[in-house]
Image (cartoon, rainbow, N blue to C red):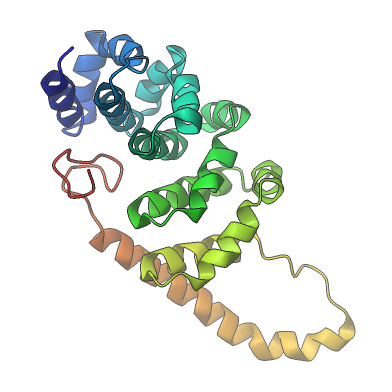
Length: 242
């Protein structure tokens, strides 16, 4: 398959879930999977990009990607390939988490997606960083009744990385990190009687702070809408980021 054909297909997948389904029904996913083993870096990169847009579709479409074992190969590329391919893999992993149902999320956790996304938190590439944060936030939200994701994030150093990102100068990153920590890693669960006055004193400020973070993050996320139909999950190949 030529580079031009792969690029056209990837753009094709940003149109709608119905259009993407037509390509899936025609058998495109196994062909893209085979390209993940290409010796040409650009073919691997574009194939990963195309799969990231399929993973941003429906639960059923994500399952097709999972069924051909593409996610395991994506993990291998993320661990071992060149930087430009690894960057595309982050989009696949994050999109898969955001799209997934509970069963699919468990599969993604088992192949190490949590640890992979956490390893991205040290990157200086803001768009890739924000993409990883989106995936981490989504998996925490979906597994809120369980501590599995929280423990995975702590064990791999992800919580430390999140705390360090509170110093990030980018407002979108800062607010997203604060939202994640406030919502899922508030560890002040126990206190003594001596702590009660200070808790009451700070309650209103804490509540207002959370409301501010939530509203501001929502507004900034809406402003940050991508060119294509799916917000920040499908991308145009002719973006300045590629």
